[in-house]
Amino acid sequence: MDMKKTVEHRLKILSYNIHKGFTAGNSTFVLDQMRDTLRRVHPDIVFLQEVLGDHQKHRKKIAGWPDGSQFEYLADQVWPHYAYGKNAVYTSGHHGNAILSKFPFTEWENLDVSSNRFEKRGILHGIIPLPGLPNPLHVFCLHLNILHWGRNKQVRTLCGRIRERVPENCPILIAGDFNDWYGRATTILMDSIQTQEVFQSSTGQTARSFPARKPVLSLDRIYCRGVKVASAKLLKGKPWQTLSDHLALYCEVLY
Image 1: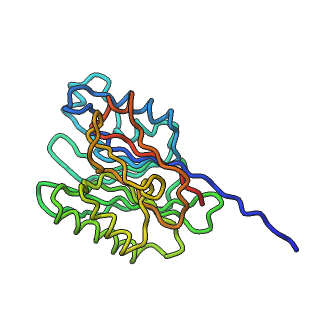
Image 2 (image 1 turned 120 degrees about the vertical axis):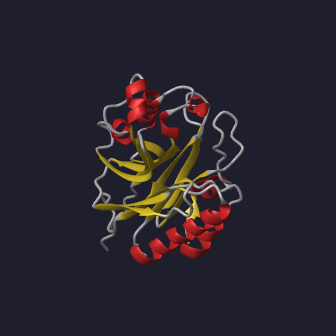
Image 3 (image 1 turned 180 degrees about the vertical axis):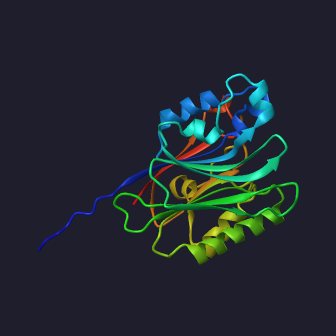
């Protein structure tokens, strides 16, 4: 009998709210240090929130401000493929979510899920074929409302998007800043689209990622479906605690 051995592929994932490249309190611009730190981890796919696509005032006043967007600066030569969702637009520029990838996207789209005029929010949805994977990976990067009623509505919109646009045989990764103190998003996502949160799966509880220096709140999450969680790690201590006001989440999944 011809027995073919199944080969497992490992995918490294990182999710990070970069606070527009500034330390907590906006006291110091540290985008360069963030790039160096991300490179040392070297994940395959990076989910970023609070990324500045442009800011004319900062460009004129702050030394070391990148010539292009923050996501292009962070991607540099490590992550040649990226997608950006412009959410908040103002006189001097705009910011939103971004996904950096070592693998090319076949397509991506930013879905406006703003529920009030004070919080401009989006869900960035990309499709990435992976080597050795018969069906493409669907990736979602988001930063949800502070107010729970808007946040719950946004999570349900995400579930509807996945039911309508993602075939059941395609794996899913969802990552970002959920602003979800009480874990309601996890319940909705588990019940509606059968995802699992990677830290709960690996360690039994969600990771406390905010504020970075003394984290007490589990605001940041990574959810998956159709892949196996191999490990999950909160990136804490130096230099992480001295960069953004959030800590980064890291996990490895198998497919």
